[in-house]
Image 1 (cartoon, rainbow, N blue to C red):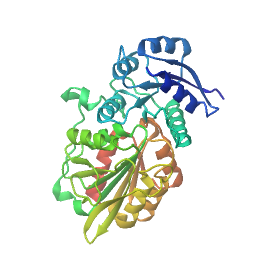
Image 2 (image 1 turned 45 degrees about the vertical axis):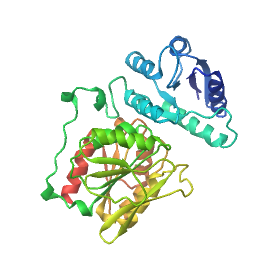
Image 3 (image 1 turned 180 degrees about the horizontal axis):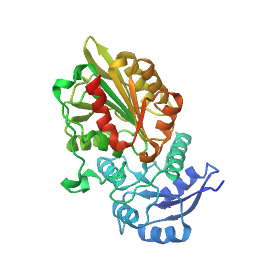
Image 4 (image 1 turned 90 degrees about the vertical axis):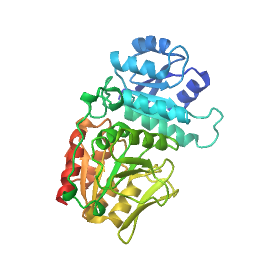
Length: 359
C-alpha cells in the first residue's frame, strides 16, 4: 500500500520539523518535503506531487488564505490548515475551510512535553482523513455550492418556510453531530432553516475558542439564532446551541422545559465534545420527540448514540457518501442500524422540516 505523501508549509523551521516528527510516527505517512513560503511550496507541489498539504495560516510573501484560494482554483488538493488558537486565527481558519481546506490542526507549542502522543495521533488522523477526502475546488462548499459569504445574493440557497400552525416546536428536539467537513455542512443546513424551526443542539468536533467564533459566524448568516452553549442554557425554538470546545454537552429536561448541561468528563471516542454523549442524552430525555442528523466526519463518533436515539423512538437522517467530505461518521451510523434515511446534504434541511410537520 502506497504511503500518504505529505508536504508541510510553514515559515517556522521548528514547526516544520515538529510536524514531520509527529507524522513520522505512522508508517503509512511519509513527509516528502517542506517549504517556508507559498512560492517554494508551489514549486515543490509540482515536483513532489504530495497527497496532502499542511499549510500555515500566517506566512511571509503570501498569506495562507491567498495561497489556498489560488491552489483550489488551479490545483485542488487536500489541505490541512495549521492554525493558532487566537480569535484572529479562528476567523482565518473558518475562512480556509470555506475556501476548501479539509480540516485544521491547532499549531503545537514548540516546547511541548506532555500530550505529544495524543497530538501526534490527532494530526495523523486528520492527514489520513484528508488523503481520502472529497476535495472541493474554489467556490464549492460542503454540498458543492458556493459559500454564502463569497457568493452573490442570487446564488444563495432559497430560505425554507415553515407554517407555525403545522409544528409543535416545544415538543421536538433536533440533534446534529458532525466532524471533518462539518463547519461548511452545518452552515448549508442551518442557513436555510426558518426562524420558527424547533430547538437544535449541535456537537461539532472543534477545540476551545473555535466554537465561539464558529457559532458567532453562523449567527450572522442564519435566520435562526446560533450561539456557543453555556451551562444551563434553555433549548428554545428558533435557537441552535453548539457544544463548546473541550466540553461535553448533554440535554436535560425539567417538566416541559429542556436545557443543556456542560461537563468535562473524560473524552469519548477520543473527543470532547463527543456526539455520542449528546445523542445519548437526547435519547434519554427527548426520545420519540427528537430528530437526529449525522453529517460528514471521520471516525465513528455518534453511531452508537444515534442507535440509542432510534431505539427511543427518534427519526434519524445521515448525510450520503457523495456529498460528504469524509463519510466516516455517517457510514458507521448506517452500519450500526441507527439511520432511517440517507440523503444528500442539500436535501437534509427540507427533510428535517418535512419530518417536523408530520411529527
